[in-house]
Image (cartoon, rainbow, N blue to C red; front, side, top):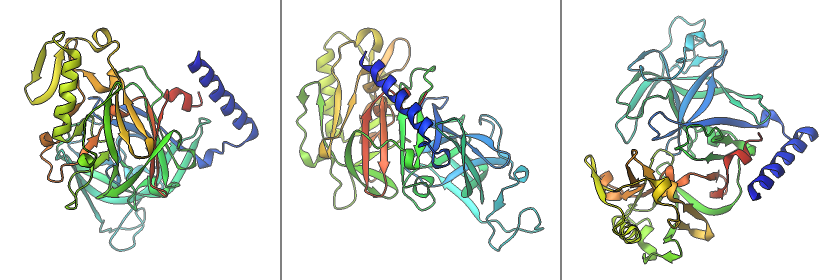
Length: 390
């Protein structure tokens, strides 16, 4: 009943705003979001060029460049939909080392584009500019002309096939998050439900900056938050306050990230949390291991059937902000018979800086908003349908 009331109130406010004309479509930049084919990342549906060509791009809060696969393209077999063909767009212009008009210039020395990610996936090509098209709440479109982006003609190793590129959302100078109002939000529902259609990304003034806020700092292009502790049900785990702090040598700290599927915590915290989980599950569940990831805590059973009543695991942040993980966020159903914790030890990543990462699965059932000017991130637990205006 409470959800029905919230939904009706949100719908009423939306209708009233439409009637009064306060929802101005050219100030709204919205994209439908869906899980990738592997479920490891989330993809935003935007369009590029004139005529607009839809592109599914991975949302990445740890980078700033937008890039898409472009024809001609090498190793682009696993994309979805049409590739972007710059020669067919009337609004495309290459970024040349000397000024040049793409349509009327016989020779352009393009500025090269190349990017490499932590999983060793790569893309290279040239930089260009074109119009990027987003949706609006009232089912219209908003266009952003002359956007700098990478045209990827050569794609290297890709561990998460099925996308057409990457949408960088950190606070870098070339990020669309910086260029459009310096605020954005995304709402992620149940990633395990293939029929859930309300995941969304909003940039600019329409971003959802509601709920509890906690400050962030940016280091090396990543959003670092101040994590203060973890609770399992009503029990606060015995974790020293300095455990999650960034050290003077710039190691440690906690990053909130859309590019990582699962959460990685300091090894001592992971051991403490795993021990608490094993104590709660007792001898009711037989443990198993994953060959390629022996550090994962996995059990035989079904989340929906066997973990009814499992206590909520809560990540506590500065200024009273929390992320509450129910059993569907804290565990992941690996197959019909095995489920695993969605939290691993930092040591398994082999990263020199050893930061903890708050991954995508931990952010399910939340709207997460970023205010880049005042440097706050907002957590609001909500059904994304209530934010969709539908």
